[in-house]
Amino acid sequence: MQKNIKKRFTILITQAKQTVNKTFELDKTARLINGLVLTSDKDDLLYYRGEQKIEINGEEYFPEDYESKLLMSGINVAPNSRYYNLGGIPPGNGAVKIVYQDVEDGRSVFTPYRVSLYIDYTVDKSVN
Image (cartoon, rainbow, N blue to C red; front, side):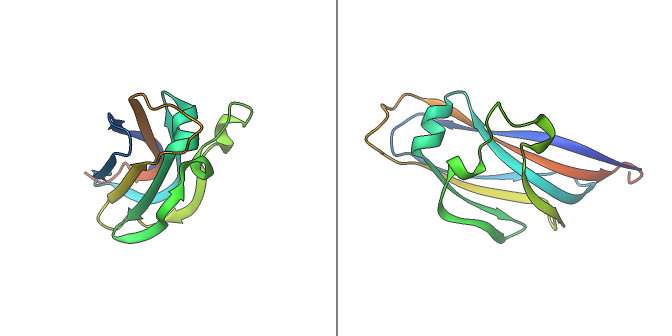
């Protein structure tokens, strides 16, 4: 039996121009990664200041300096349409690596914020 899971991974940005390098692990029963989305407790800072690189199973899907605003979704988008569609890629070792960077932009004043990376993936519930 297969089931879709939406899992949240959190990155805390505590200083201006900070770079955070994190690797997150998906469940061992993960079979396909369907999509991802970025959110924040301060969406304006994520939108204007955020850049990242994202790798899945060692393969780069979003290059260094990829702007966060391209992976965000607004409240006017239907909930089932909010994720960036990855098309059901195999998770391999299940490692999702993100290198997130806060970049000075001149339009926003820094304050600490949380970045959340949500991954939508399919698990095989018959595997123990």
